[in-house]
Length: 76
Image (cartoon, rainbow, N blue to C red; front, side, top):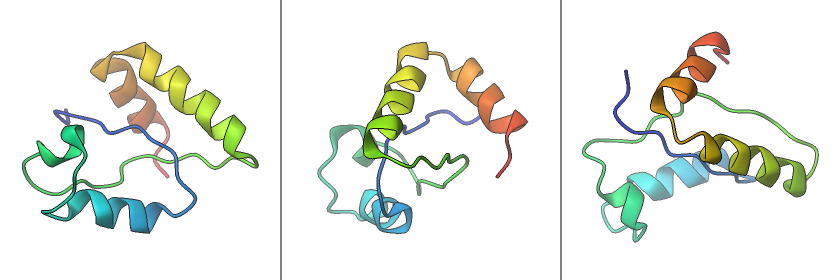
């Protein structure tokens, strides 16, 4: 199982991953990660509002096991 999952929304996923993997990145959560962040799951939404609602839903789970199950059952 992956030790940590980053959950977020963006309109440019490649740029977001690149920024999180930069040594100078300022996010307290992502800069603590040892090694690179890799994309393991994504969903696409028509509106930013829909994406934020889904992001918050997944964050409320607060369960690595439930998130890992989501990833495993939905390989993109």
